[in-house]
Image (cartoon, rainbow, N blue to C red; front, side, top):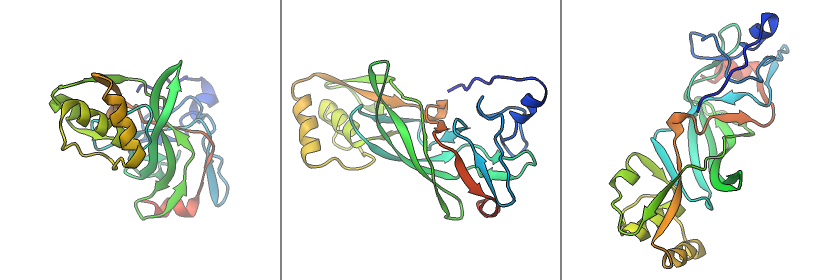
Length: 227
């Protein structure tokens, strides 16, 4: 997902580059709202709401239904550094959260809701951030072959049930099992249909880059111990 950058002149432009990605700091900011990204104190600093954290995932795509919740662990895609080049959040830091139902312009879809950061040393930090709403879908028809559908994909329990029941493939591995009433509801719906749609999330295309919904408070002592 492309993030458009509002370039500004003079001092404002320099401020917009306060936090960047990469060990060799590239000359761009992660998001337009980063003009005053460092609010430094002697011990703590804050990354404000609106900042965008680039993420990655170890699968090419994630398949979920628009009604299900599915646990997912993302990773920070690039080092986040301050103006002095010090790493604030290291590449590879885990982001624990889940895909959950959401809608955009009356279209059902899914988005990632972050819960916490897990730093390489095991420290944890709560995180209030979310991805965009993904409404891209793929239609699964009864009797379809699953090769292309499942290639390099992580699959939510609801989506796994949909695909399994329609295609007859009983060996689909879901992110977590679907049990009880949930499984029965999916089966009941599909018995009356010859096709169904699943939401297709593409993490490598920026679908799950995260926007902070509230400021992220980090201590300077933690910063030096988190990578």
